[in-house]
Amino acid sequence: MDTFVEGRRTLRGSIRIPGDKSISHRAVMLGCLASGESRISGLSTAQDVASTVLAFQRMGMHIEFRGEETHIAGRGISGFMGEVGPQLPEIDCGNSGTTARLLIGLLCGARKRAVLTGDASLRTRPMKRVVAPLNDHGAAIRMSGGHLPVELTGGRVQPIHYRVLVPSAQVKSSLMLAALFLEGRSIIVETVPTRDHTERMLLHMDGRIGVKRTTGGTQIHIMGLRELAPLDMTVPGDISSAVFFIAAALVTPGSSLTIRNVLINPTRAHILNVLGRMGGRIEQEVREEFPEPVGDIHVRHSRLSGVRVGGSDIPLIIDEIPALAAAAMFARGDTVVTGAGELRIKESDRIKGIVHMVRSFGGRIEESEDGFTVYGRATTVPAEIDSFGDHRMAMAASVIALATKGRSTIRNAECVDISFPGFFEVIEQNTAG
Image 1 (spheres, rainbow, N blue to C red):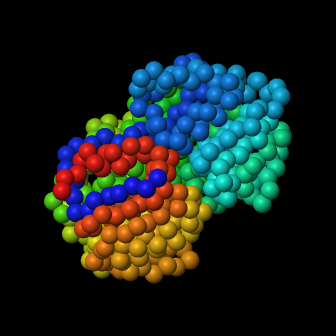
Image 2: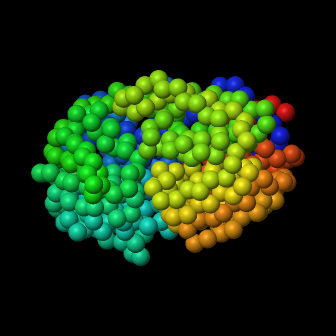
């Protein structure tokens, strides 16, 4: 499906963003492991989250949708682990790397036998980073070439003591979910901070978890076989989706936008700091602090300057870099991104996708192995651009298109439903020529 975006339109008013995808995945998984019924309002309707819901339904879990609320009948840690039985039906994780990687750890800890697979894109993404530490601790997992399909054949995972080698919240969370089923203390160490939703949610559910920050990194201690209290929560708006509207408002003259009830957790909202370093006029109004910081974001058109990002910035903004690249086209000076090689193994090679996007709209960009340099103040022109089936690239292209005079075409734009169903409808409702 092709989508047309008319340019030079201001963004005004107040919008709400669908529920955060990362939190929604974890709420479904941990709700299934809780002792009793969990009630979750505002669960993301993204296709990726639907993959997680369907996976647990395939395992016999009862998940019911009642209007805006999702009700999950949790079995408890002991109940979920106790039903070893025959091999589970094959689990299709769709396009969702979070579903696949977190389920590998959860099912290994629970000693389930299963085969996990996914669509063509997901079957190219690396799984060894999760499988290797689990196998080293007693799991029995088979795969070919480090990718899906992955076969869990049994084994008995021992308490985990592991330093995460690749900064990844998915790896960390996968090991944490495995640790919930293990007798004794597991210690997972990360040297570079990543999103901390799993830690926060387990604390909210009375899990036996402690977080210690040391000179050698952050240590996460988990005592296994502790039953979890059910969830009763509202999922805040997804900051990784909100950032495309934030970037568009920053670069489109006359724009003034408020995004309500959005996640502003520092491990997810670091992109706001980066855009602030560029001169973006962004204000945050905190409304809640626990279990996640939530608030309103006010953004106005700004004169941006180029910025350098790398090192510890990257794990905290990896999903938002396409939006950053789009904004960088309109900044004075150059924007340099380094240390972002992880972009090459997302839903598409996002470094190549960003290069294609910037050049298609008339900008100048230089590609490197682990990043790129955008030369700012481009005189942009309308473009016809392929999303490569990548939701974040389609949304990033819309940022540039909104600030460019004329009509642009985004091909295969239906991929936005992976994370933000109705994205283009929200643009139409909140823009004016």
